[in-house]
Amino acid sequence: MRKLLRGLAWAACVLACGAAAHAQSDYPSRPIKMYVPFPPGGGIDVTARIAADKLSQILGQQIAIINQGGGGGAIATDAVARAEPDGYTLLYHSVTGITHAAVTADLPYDWLRDLAPVSLITRFAPVMIVTPTLPVKTMADFIALLKANAGKYSYGSSGTGTAVHLATELFKQKAGVDIVHVPYRGTIAVLPDLMSGRVVMMIDGVPAEAKNIQNGTVKALAVTTATRSPVLPDVPTMKEVGLDYEVPFWTGLYAPVRTPRTVIDKLAAAANAAMHDPDVVKRLNAIGTEGVGSSPSELDTATRDQFALYRKIVHDNPALLNGQ
Image (tube, rainbow, N blue to C red; front, side, top):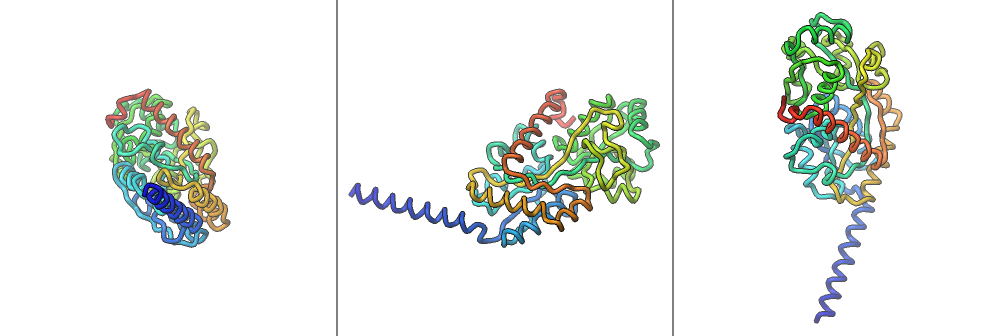
C-alpha cells in the first residue's frame, strides 16, 4: 500500500510539473492584466498604454490596463503582489512606487521580497514648474523669492512619500529654502491649484507637463536630469542653474515574486522589442520619454538604487515620514 501511495504521489507530481511546464511554454495563452496605480490620462498612464499596445501585438494576447489609484500606489501594488505568480497579472509603476515603499513602514507588502523585476520600460526627465503669475523668470529668481519669504509659499505633490514629494525635499536641502508641502491624490489634482496660485510649485514628469509648459499654462524653471529634455530644449538642468542635484524618473514592469523565470524572460524580451520599435520610439520621444526595455537585473539595480537614494533623504529629515 505504501508503495502504491508513493507511486500515486510521484505520478501526480509528474503530471503537475508537466502541466506547469506546458503552461509556461504556452505563455501567454489568455489576456494579461496590467495594473497602473495612476488615473487615466496622466503621463505614466500614457506611457503604459503605448507600451501595452505594442506588447499585446508582440505577445499575441491583449494586455488590459487597470487604473487603480490610492495609497500612493499601494493598492495596485498590493493587488499584484498577492496575485497568482503566473505572468497574467503585472504592475506598471513609476519610480514613485519604489520611493513610497522605501520610506513607508506599514505597507502590506515588501517590494524587494514580493515583486519580481521584469524590465525597465521608460526614462524621462522631471521638470520643476511654477504658477505663471509668480514674479520669477529663472531658478535664481525663484530661490531668492523663497529665501526672502521663508515658509510663505507652498508646493504640491502626488502624496507624502512619493518621488515627487521627496525630489522636492531634496531640492529644498540643496537650495537652502523653506517651502511648505501640500500633498494631493496625484499630480493631475495639483494643477488647478498650481494654475490659480494656491500652491506655487511642483515637480512632475515632462510627459505630463510638456504641453502645459509650451502653451504657457505653467512656467518651467529646470529639469532634474543630467541633460536637457529634447522636447523642452530651452529649459536648463538643475546643474546648469548651479544646484548639485540630479533625480531621473522612470517606469518599470514587475510581476509577483515566484513568477517562473521563463515567463519573466519572455516578458523582458517582449519589452525590449517593444521599446525599440520605431513607432513606439517616435510616440515616446514626442512626449519627452526614452524607451528602454532592459533586462530584469537592470531594473533590479535601478530599484535598489532608488531605495538607497530616498531612504537617505528621509534619514536626513525623519519628519518627512510624518507628512511634514
